Image 1 (cartoon, rainbow, N blue to C red):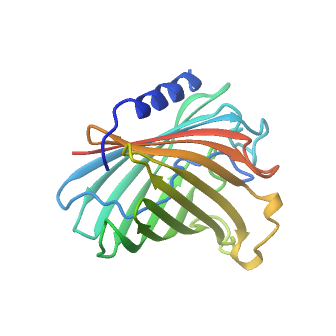
Image 2 (cartoon, helix red, strand yellow):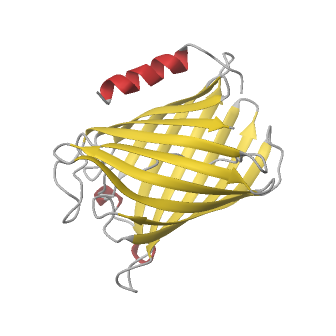
Length: 256
């Protein structure tokens, strides 16, 4: 992607100023694409989001209320091969009345099939297994399997994620939850991308529906690169009563 020095910097500064399912914003808000670090190389992403306006009540006993909660999640990953990557997330939250807290970790494995990274389709999968505190998860051990599909044509990119989440602790009959996320982006002549991302909870797989009672959020986003540092910034608007009303998110990625 072509580098642009000014606009992303202003975006990052604006996020810093603001930061002075029904569920609070998750530890990472992104639509997974086909990006992989090179074999034998390390990389890191720094995920952060801030609920400008959200629920002041906990989603379950012991949960951190969403309103004015800031979540910061460093992610470190290593390229295993041209198609496989291993990563680790470290979860933290800062909220009114609770201060800063460490909330657990997740290990992930990502696979992307060989493809042309400039045009045409791409596909892959991402598996995450983690343990989190009661502040951010109703069950301590959990897992997610994410399907990844996308297509590039000229300046346009579209991508889709199908997410299946389930508990690894607690009741063996805990339902598998389904979420469908999308991204549409257009690369401008100035080198950065403008687009939209949507994050849509659809409920338990065995009983899909009741969308109005679940979180549905639409983000306006910008993607760019500053001296080999990838930046994704977005402002999200909740579309249902179960959603956080306004959320800001920032993902900064570095390849070593």
